[in-house]
Length: 235
Image (tube, rainbow, N blue to C red):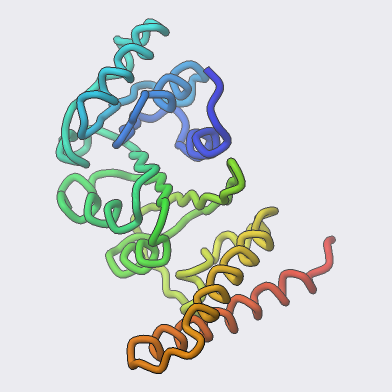
């Protein structure tokens, strides 16, 4: 089974020889890959919808992995018992939904050592919530697939203070790691905020002015980060 770049990046960030839960497993591609490549010793593949779960069951059966991949129907972390999984994958959902999943069952969430998260939107809101609720971001990666750049985070329990608001928008670990896609990622974000500023031209309502000021602050900060990255000479 060949994974897409996004799914492969997620799979490669999972801790070795652990019990993994894949929440929102869809077709079960990641669980099969984790077992096939001896990354996980057991996987719990869960989905809130029965249709995708049936697809996952077919793929699991195709590779004769029913004894090491268990499927469960249910919403978020409610499919797990506290201490049952070492690590959890939550990918392909909005950042606010991921936040809600993590906050819904604190006794289960607190029992899990590592989370691999891949939010589709609202990444800044998710980072803000994580750092305010006893989590730290241990690692981050960018991955490009079909002209879109995705953010993948490795989260563990701990504390971390953010020294600048921009690190909610651009993960601090991405800058520390000098992620090869970071410059392109920042340029895409700059383009997005400049397009919003163009749309707000001529509007003078209080809401428009607040949005304009927010965009201007983000553009300024992103340009600062971009300038620093471009001025860093390779070793």
